[in-house]
Image (cartoon, rainbow, N blue to C red; front, top):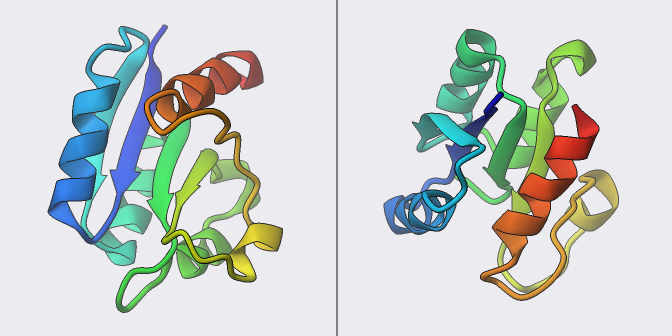
Length: 116
């Protein structure tokens, strides 16, 4: 059974970089890539993902706005992405991001396997 995943980031290079890293994970099925919060909400509704890589700082509807808009019963496991400066988002978003940058997607995937 694959882990249905969406990638949400306003930067195309960031989305592509994560997609490339996730290609080596046979359990991952990327069902949508979204460039903004509105697209993310539509993708969550349409695809019911298990895992969402979510950029917190996006123009318009931010990642935090997305999280506030998703009903609890539809909420996928969330791995958040944000610039290296810390903000109040650290206390809001639960993440399983541990390890080096190359290991982070793999660690999140491993956490998702146990979460389902």
